[in-house]
Image 1: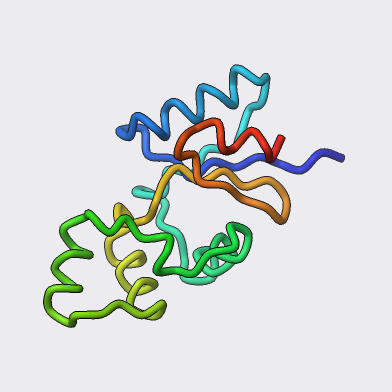
Image 2: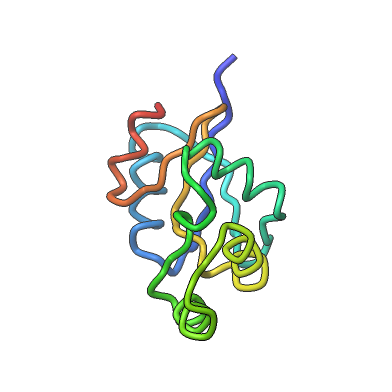
Length: 117
């Protein structure tokens, strides 16, 4: 049985839209998780980081204002801090993320996800 494909998706993001289209071009119909509406839990974030092989801090979009404000106030950012930020402000999570089985890739550029297929 083939593993289900899931995309952690923001339809307002061009990279996310392009990655979803790329999957469809490859005749894949992923489960689309609109993470801004259906927020990821801390457990899900931990699992995704493990599948990506990165830390929670590495999953943050560091140019988002909430992250800049936090670093400006506290000067540093731990994995625990990153988790709290991602739960409170889901838009700070790097996107899109495509998950297949026990592996995941960030679609930046979108072609990065093809190695999962």
